[in-house]
Image 1 (cartoon, rainbow, N blue to C red):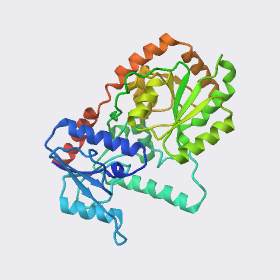
Image 2: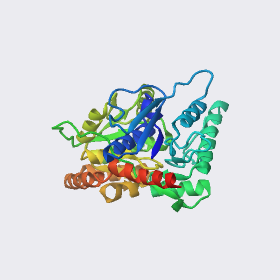
Image 3: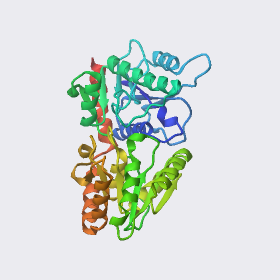
Image 4: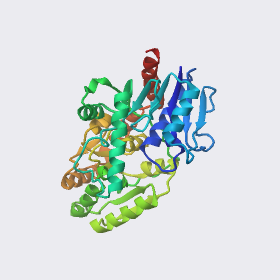
Length: 366
């Protein structure tokens, strides 16, 4: 079987869920040691080691010119490669007439209105939002099969697209984060969180909990906030100041090893998200032995199971109470660390790849 995988997120400089997803899938495909030919479509060269050295992997660099769009280049290269299946990784798959397609749609956020999503009033921003929603819906109609990353996402996508949830293939993501440096000393009062410009991540809830709930703590915990870009850092610093969070530190420019060390050094990782298709960072924290306090939003109990503790993602008071209880419970955190490691170990890239390959083979067989 020959598969074209839209792996362009691998060659994009910005961090994000799409790139992590593709990296995990590619790593898992390499681990299976299969004979299927995997052609990775990129839009620029990638650092050495990004693409597996296995003989069944190939790379195509689609370098857009002023005369051709990304989609026309993609379709032209597909006609040359004549694959059995083309797989889209970013909620859509470029149109490739005459070739079976599959697509991973990670969540319904791009096609279903949620109260926490604010679309900029500028016409350009509205047009971009509608364009991506149109691409997702068209790809869903054209694809032979659709993969999504959780049963919760399948239900919401089914509601948004008007199709039964059991028509989606649920394939949980795999974890690629390396082990922390040894040894890493765990702080007893450090709370770790991930900053984002995405409103669904709901970081304001954590800031309000630490500010308004400061009186609940004998000594307010120190919040460490991971920032993935200068823009995210500036927004986080402004929000922390506006909310009056008493103690905080911004962690910027972390590579994967440094991120693993940050997880390992924290007493608790807090994930206040409104909504997720999957939610990988809490699992990464568990991999590093960090106890997780997560919102109870859809997908999180499915993904994290009983290895995490949960709070109401609309109540800063509930978060403050649960955080105080967990920070005061050293024995409970130790047990959560043990359970979390064991739970996260089941989310392997190989399992992710094997389940994805099964979908592709079904399509290739017709």
